[in-house]
Length: 433
Ligand code: NDP
Image 1 (cartoon, protein in one colour):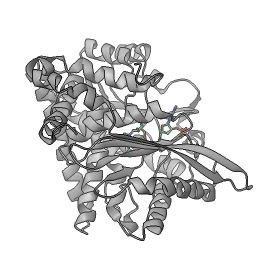
Image 2 (cartoon, protein in one colour; image 1 turned 30 degrees about the vertical axis):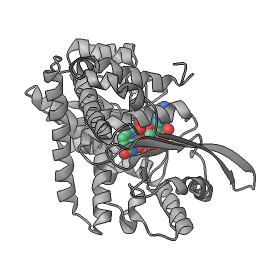
Image 3 (cartoon, protein in one colour; image 1 turned 180 degrees about the vertical axis):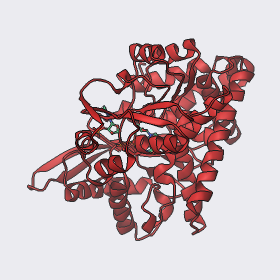
Image 4 (tube, protein in one colour; image 1 turned 90 degrees about the horizontal axis):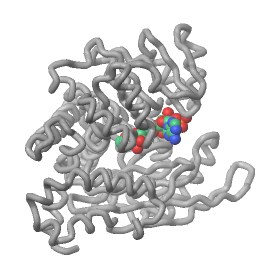
């Protein structure tokens, strides 16, 4: 705590992992001798920089940029960029720390990092977004490379922002280095299924958790939070697997549509028009918009939180369980507080923590890197099959580790232990670096 003052989310993420590792350290005393915990909690490199840009009226703004390169024992640093006004070093460090274990869980050769800025993309023109992205990359480019550090999107960073970032990288370096960013558009080096991957992956993970309990998504009611990249495609895959997705949210409120969300309208409003959910409710006659409030007040069988961290408190978790929720698959990173997680585990419902349940996004990013490296382009069907298999493997690894380490069904412990052991083994082999 003294080393990293006031980084609350980072402390929360570290504590959750460390609590799971007691049985691992009992079995591997050499990790304590090698100070593996202290090493793994300290980022390899942290970069903080000024991002100056001008708005359309010529006014100058200064934002802060971050890249925390956390761990490269398994491969080049890999993890998204978040543009949101709430971003500070503690956010990026918690996300980077989680990313290390998530990336290890995928079984792909990628290290962990995260970055972003306190820039708020909301209400900005295309030209302002472009100027900001160009300024951000003008500093960040020197730290990146397909063998070094490979960013992707996250909250506030989608294909449009990645396009401007990639364009500036290409211009400065004079290299068409496709593998330096993932989540690219299909016409400039992107891969099929990357856009859908995190949401689809969270749905596949829910399906695996339910299958382990002898049931499935078929006929279940689902609520997702958020209405961004992860939420939309989690909803789409759940619907394809036979569930009825009845609600989603944005930061102004939520919509409920008991007949099941109309995903075409949702995509039009959110992806094309970049509008608010009120516009969805205006177009779909049987949908109801609730301003403010929590989407988690809507009873459901399966919850897929896909907005942001700490959106599910202890009280929210209690009300979800009371309303009959049997499974939570986290599309977002750390959306449930530690007290909320305890409620889910004690209630014995299926609970898939973000670092496992949303690993499909970064896994598909690694598939995009493979395609870039071999100048190849895979079909949607093939890539989706690979994603589904990866999510099955991630679930199986967490499930088995939970049993092996004495907490059957506890996928939090299973995910943390599996991710940690994979990274620790590599760090041990590479020596004290
Ligand atoms: P988007 O920016 O596409 O969408 C985020 C959605 O969540 C929006 O609907 C947004 O509403 C809402 N939201 C964000 N912050 C808040 C907040 N503080 N309060 C209320 N609502 C909020 O982001 P993504 O869908 O990409 O990311 C969502 C989550 O998934 C994040 O936790 C991210 O780290 C995680 N994730 C994303 C991956 C990816 O591949 N994109 C990979 C793995 C994890 P509004 O527009 O009104 O702000």
